[in-house]
Image 1 (cartoon, helix red, strand yellow):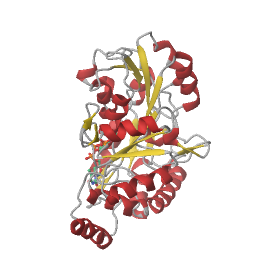
Image 2 (cartoon, rainbow, N blue to C red; image 1 turned 30 degrees about the vertical axis):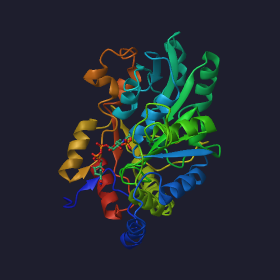
Image 3 (tube, protein in one colour; image 1 turned 60 degrees about the horizontal axis):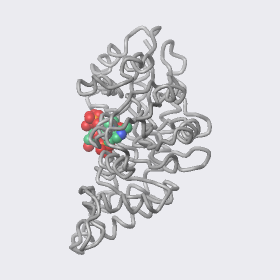
Image 4 (cartoon, helix red, strand yellow; image 1 turned 180 degrees about the vertical axis):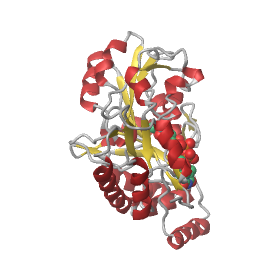
Length: 369
Ligand code: T4K
């Protein structure tokens, strides 16, 4: 059976259009469109509660959140940042755009996050930061990373772009490390169309982030640092306020999809399902699987087969950052056995509430042959 409607890896969470236009009209009538307006400030406060963080600084995308998070730490120019290659380009780019040097550390095969046991071997006197990614919403080994950072006097930043609302032992994921960053891009569980935020635990980093997102402006007479424009406008903040009321329902629907996939794919020879560590809650951002060697098709063959049925899963993350030409000289690139094995086998299946039972059954049927 060929499906005529395309099935994507994700579809954005959309607020009720009439409710949105009501809020958009309020913005229109207020003549206050951007620069930390009422809706922006309200959303920031709501996000602090939702993410269980002391401080949240709203941004206009997750990439600028990363750039500012790193700039804020005032790390020595040219110093090294130990990071994962198994991520979206934005993570590594944010290091280089801050005049820092990425060093690639391999990942561990269960959560695909940076392998904390391999970090120490990469540390030199020139290392200043560990930048982990909670990839697919799976938390990094925050405890181990914290110990290593303390021992070697390093800063820690987490890219939590995929981990909206994830908690570790009841603690908001954005409270770990010195700073965390989130993305609210349309493809994310929670979206503001484009958007993101920085979260941190102390007032100093909060104040610096607030100023850097607004050109380094402190007040009408003072610019105290080389900032940028990372402000979210009022229309997107209105969208974000509405989506904040909806994302739990979306998560519940994805939870049911996850149960269906777990039940029906778990027994297929050669298909490995990744499991969330028991002390963490699931964000339900992605449903990644690994196509092992004993499956009857390669990952790329399976992908092609899906495409024939108008189904478009994604090979997140392939290629990995260490494959990019611009990162071919990065230290650590030659010692990434897990990353280089996994990148040919990983696939994120369609995962959003709009999928029908018929869609899901077709996906399973295609795989179970
Ligand atoms: N750190 C990490 C770990 C990240 O994954 C990302 C972004 C960032 C940092 C940076 O955050 P942002 O600066 O983006 O806020 C997408 C997203 O654009 C990107 O935000 C995301 N990670 C990355 C993993 O995925 P693409 O190029 O794969 O997206 P695209 O346009 O192919 O969309 C994927 C599917 O989603 C489409 O096939 C259909 C569906 N879709 C997409 C859009 C944009 C829709 O249905 N509607 C839409 O409006 O990068």
